[in-house]
Image (cartoon, rainbow, N blue to C red):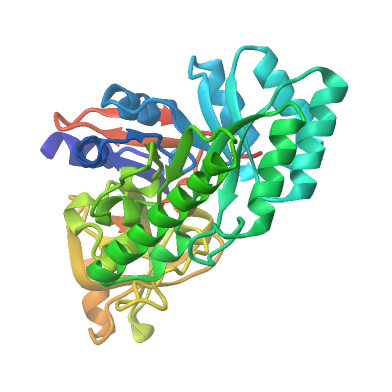
Amino acid sequence: MTDTLAALATLETPAALLALGRLQRNIARMQSRATALGVALRPHVKTSKCLPVVAAQRAAGAGGITVSTLKEAEAFFAHGIADILYAVAITPQRLARAMALQRRGCALRLLTDSLAGAEALVAFGRAHGQVFEVLIEVDTDGHRAGLAPDAPELRAVAERLHAGGARLAGVLAHAGSSYELDDAAARTALAERERAGCVHAAQRLRAAGLPCPVVSVGSTPTALAAAHLDGVTELRAGVYVFFDLVMRNLGVCDDEDLALSVLTTITGHQPDKGWALVDAGWMAMSRDRGTAQQRQDFGYGQVCGLDGRPIDGCLMVAANQEHGIVAHPGAPGAAIVARFPLGTRLRILPNHACATGAQFGAYHALAADGGVQVWERFGGW
């Protein structure tokens, strides 16, 4: 720990830190979960957008990956990962880019949830002699996109893809409303609803004589709560690799599982207000206030000492673009000045790891021996 603290004292702030011991435990936990449930794990790499992180997930046993942008697909394919699911409904203007990836050897699967989307895929494929492999998104919880498992359009979309020359790969569901559930039993019930709805959709297609080899479900909360995944072939989850305060509030993880933090420096004080100012504003932490409606509001993040241990009651209570405000509600202003002198370094645990990670071009990965590695990440679309 002494070596780590010495290394952190030299970094420019703000900086995104990854605790590698926690990261590896998180990866092992989800991989063990998928293995126990008898399904393949296809991690969603939008959380990290970082090759060493994804390499660690694959080394633990994950096969293909899930992406949310074609830039992610291109970047990871360039580093030898070919089995990729683009889990956002494809729009017509992106089909040429998807085709280019496929023609370079990427086994890219696409997603649609409408007859219009199926028509666009079929028309483009015929015009360019390209066979697209496509999953249909199923909505099992009313959270966002997809067709209801019983919707007549589900079969119509599948038939259009199949008859039009596309390869119908299967069905996919994402129970995103799980992020609203802080009750373990409720998460287990939603995981079953997600599983049952997606499996039912697959059974409908198979009963109609249509192929449906893939049944894909997942979110971090439902992946860790599912009682079983009978009929499912693959599990998707993303934020588990880092976890965050939203997941901690749900009871999905503990403080000791939070692998991502932001290193920041005290730049000044407002004693009469009980504030310490830091150089990590919302440009570092993001504007995500995902804990605001949860059982505990962490403001813009939980304040920790340089050792990563939370300082009870001390939060980043407000943020401007490049300034954060750290306070300990109820403590006298002089106390915060004395506790955090000018130049003091702190770590802030984020509300939403995906959003905070996206503010940085690299992570500083902290090894148990005190070593610090710079792991590049990327953004954009």
